[in-house]
Image (cartoon, rainbow, N blue to C red; front, side, top):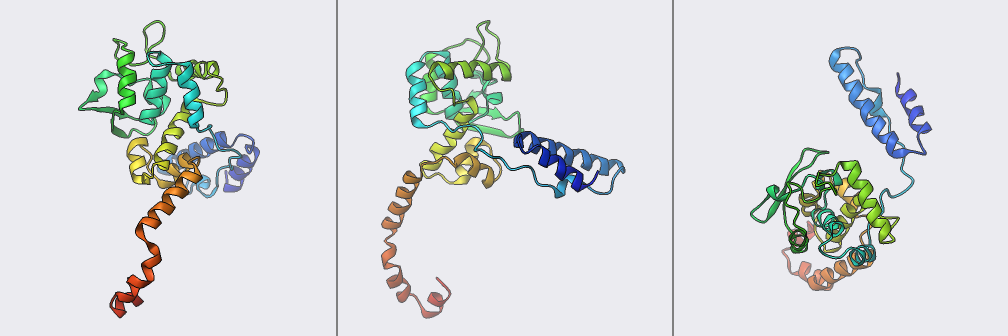
Length: 251
């Protein structure tokens, strides 16, 4: 198999870019293993780019979406607790379904991400603390089925999908709340490094994908307010007062 073969395969998957990206990742791993075994000397998949995504992925919940869900599912309901766990920890559904009181210590909830293996200690937001207190489960998992058993990942996704539908939010999903949490942090002016400390992302590009929905107006207001506070209009006057050599070097 050559890089051209794999590139043609990716072209055939342009309608399902996410599946194409996953397949390419697996092929890269497969050929790396083949090199390790001495079956190949190269990895043709590394030269190929994944198919481009046409959309923005999962819908990022807006504040109006969150309000609509909270109005339909008040504090004390399992649905509201699920929303709070997703929104105020910014974790995936695969991690939320395992969260329980045994993971809480010193005001933080310990998360070991199933997808990445990253270990996080996330401070419990006051709103999340209120939601947990309003819905005691008496189980090792905060979220359990009607039979008192922990949710499977797929089962939770289907159950939460139905709760979104009840609130008239057919365009919303559990994963969209992870993106909403990232959006909120970006709109508050948090740096990528701070956002990554909560979400568990490794690279800035990953954070960028999740914060793309941040409100431009809010961010622009923050940027202009920061510049106004710094009084950049006087920058030339300040530079003129610096020693000549320093000024010529740009400070």
